[in-house]
Image 1 (cartoon, helix red, strand yellow):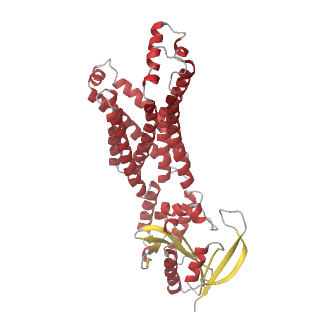
Image 2 (cartoon, helix red, strand yellow):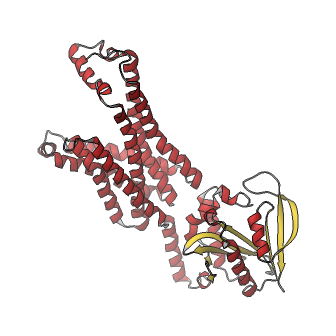
Image 3 (spheres, one colour):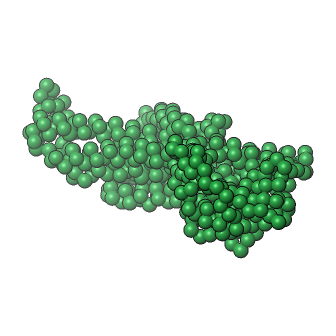
Length: 465
């Protein structure tokens, strides 16, 4: 059939354009949001994209050799739809997950934290979305626009009849396919991206915990995800909606399981540090005085703050809303938070620490930190605290500060407690008042890290008799 200009439904062009936006926009939007939230290094994105492309090229070359109909093995596989679906599913499962595994071993040398693993997943899933959904979608969009403007003659006018018929049969799909189905490709790329993020964290757990079973699990899950689409290609399943429903369920399951691995908290760098600490402990059993310190209140437990709380600390220490009225926060990188925790942990190892920094735990959940910084004479201690904004308004700062004050008076024999805050930090100076501290002064010249403007600072104090 010779389709003429204007005959192609405009909805086809719209759906193809939306599919492209979904394919390209999803990973880019997630990348921008996650990097703004965590300040994670972009190195993971580059490594993820490079590993994906490299391993897919190797995969396709080997797959072409195995499935080649010119030899008995390839001929047998091609003749058995079920076997073909299984083999076609195993190839990406094995190569992409092994690629992820290799990529993490390369990435962990400089970026061992789990935030970089997420960035790797964005690179891996994002480049696939760009290549399969973005570039192919752009090609389809250009073809659709040409068909709408000039009709089928734009492609067939200069061809002989036989070739023209082949081209017509190819491009007829733009006219005969329901417009909504052109959007399916974009939705598929979103689901594939979600699945990649989940699989990324599963393989990362394999590297972080040094357990190969997670790698084999990822390979199996990836193969399962591709198995039904393979059956669709061979004609064993004819409904595209069955395939999309299956992919949706699998992608959500991967995302849920991957998120559980992400929330486990340990990462490669923490495992290295733990190993280092164990070795050091064997050499010097007195390394940590901190294991003897635990303060307990009605609702909270206060324990020494250290590197084991890296990611939960960075959550609030890098949050603008959480830190906008503070002098030394927010932190702009995970490494900045890590350096602070290294210092805090090192202080606990001293015979007489210069400051004591506690993690505030609520039912084993790390919700903030509180510390007391001593002067040279060890007569005066300055209190400071921060509570994750998700737990504001429950009196936790007051409860924790009162217990640390008791510790400072009882154990450290301090003679004076002071605390300061921004004059607009109402919740903080109310805590100071509840603790019995009195306002000493309000001075100008305070500069918070998140603002260049000069602020007022309130100083509170309590003399211990």
